[in-house]
Length: 282
Length: 171
Image 1 (cartoon, each protein chain N blue to C red):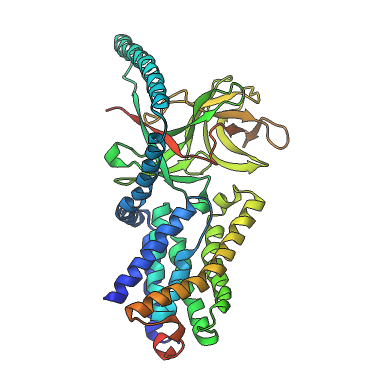
Image 2 (image 1 turned 60 degrees about the vertical axis):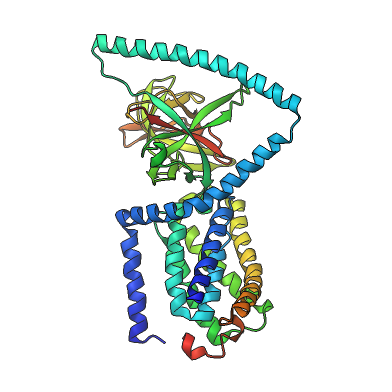
């Protein structure tokens, strides 16, 4: 059974396993495999889109006309808002130039659909159907729609960041993952920290915020936003709210140097179908 | 050539199915089960080769950092050797047991390596994830053996139920 030939065979695969453990080789393999499989996975996506379209076509003319009318109204409101924002953007750029401040990046949103999720890393990773061809860049922030419980209104919250991109797909590391380190700002106390790495407490998830200044008072319920310190992340995107830990403490002092707090993410990571990727404008 | 194309198509569909079902939040180790079938029919060395590359494809599709499926799918060849020596190939219902073992081999190492991600599910959900995979594996293997043998017979290829007849070639 275990003759020389078989031992050699097992050794070859052991070497191959080691080779594929290197991130460079893995990156090439990932790009090749995902690009090869992409057309087949997008078939299911197209079928679901066609089913949605057919579902819409089943509705009566009057219903469709009412919906079109409603969308036209919403569209004109949004067009007006965009034009105001464009003017403000130009004004902002001019003022920054006058004061001598550098240009700040503006972002465009790319809508994407979640097409794959690893069942063994359900809350940590997801794969979307947009890649470098669609303008997605590594490190871009990913947001998703959620309903604010206190107001019942829809809003957007940070889901994670783009970890790696292939031609047609992008791999997202969620805020619960150790790989997603995000510079954050705690709204009330105006303190900056780094968020990333989560855990589950009961039914909720909590995310650790590290390297917060230790001499600041933090109160539970304070909103946590992106700081915008990195050129790839816009500022003021909602991430979550500060919560108390098991010992009813909002912060813990670590190594006598910095404070560590916990926040509850606002995005619902259980059900994610569509997301928006915020990419810096060129 | 026909056999190679047949293996490629079956594994391709298995991987697609596994990843699509996985994206719904459950682990359905169809690829490992197909690998067990091909390992039994074409020998454990073929199983080892196919296991490594199909496992690697799954790891790449999910974007895993450790290619654990490549390793765990190769381990299916161990079950193949055991089943060729001690098992039975004609009684389909008996295949519930290797089905469960193969599923356990695919799922447990994955759960151990991805422990950080698995813990986020919470206790009962982890148990459900594991039990679902084992039950799915136990049910699927006998059905897959029956179905693939039917196709193999039509295509005039080697059959699973005759795998133990020329055991020397496979071990």
